[in-house]
Length: 392
Length: 92
Image (tube, rainbow over all chains, first blue to last red; front, side, top):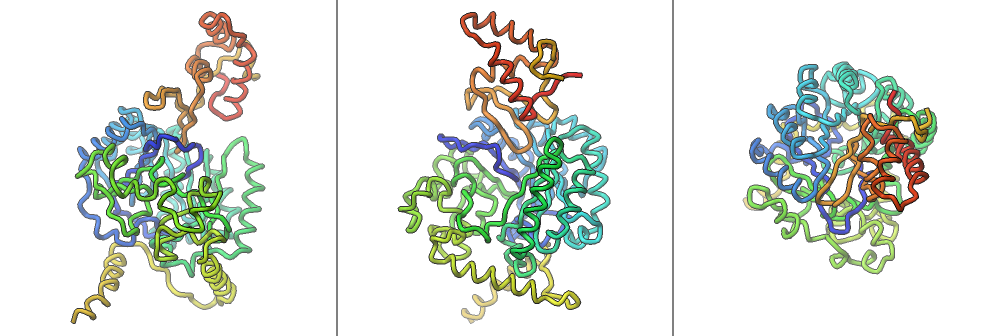
């Protein structure tokens, strides 16, 4: 998902509604942005509940609706949800792996009024794609991308970049061109949840990034009349943080499968109680819940953000990253070199760079932790162990 | 084809959707994962781009509605900007 094209509204309305319909997914990407605790989200919202969420968000001014997951195609009521969303006047985006799609469904979505389909690829070749996805899916994705164009949808192709695929950036962009993509999102992995677990194997080196940046610039110019390339840089190499979500609770509203409402799809991990649509109206939770108000404005900030002239530009960066790397979500995002924790982050990035360069290509490195329900349950069990020991 | 020429018939490009937004009190252009709010004058022009009226038709209709405004150059300029942004194209 990109924030491009959305200016921040001074009134703060949930213009962008991300509907994470389910955390079930046939893929197992080790950089998945879903929470590690996916196995806990079994009690999914019903069709009727989603109808109400969409109606209330639309009444507040939401225009963009992303159907995401997990894999949204797993939901049998997806056609119904699309039709209702379109009837309400949303611009409807389907964000999918393509697995679970076929020509009949693409046609049915068109009839329901779906505006746009985004398909993710894991790599530009079958072997690596299937390895990263943990499933045989490359050829099917390729075929689905062709059909998306055949049915005249605008098509975004999304490729998450990391150390395992970033050197194939040339091939990736050319594949997208072959498939007639309208937009290509080259999204550097953001290190939360699953990808944080796998960061030693996924974070690209500085050299890989610089090279990928140059290659992308070259193709941006070459394909500028045909295909728009959006390169999302990885912030671990930056000295200023990203203006996360354009400010907390200002534009984005994510609803996760069990109805919990979040200001950002990574906010699960924060020690904050977020409202659930089963207890709140959308207007109520957006305006009045503590979870949506806690980081609005500037009063919550600590130094160095509080007195920083750049706070109106980047809002102190990402709250999740601050929490994850410093233990306090009110701290400055350590990506910022004004943060007292920046040196620590920088040292960790250096360590991973060294690790990557010293990796013997003939030897296996630490195995990736793939995103699936079994691993989710195992991680959960491991997390509970120390607690059990102390109570014995 | 020159998008600003009298006889050109502009239409909204397939990737984009024009819509009146009550909550924003303006016309917006919607596209994959994005939105652009239009100014009132841009909205007046865009809503007449329907794949049937030519640039000359649109100018003359606007001129009737706003007789005191000198708008011809503004309309042609807007066609150019909208075309550069990919929102509209010339109907074949």
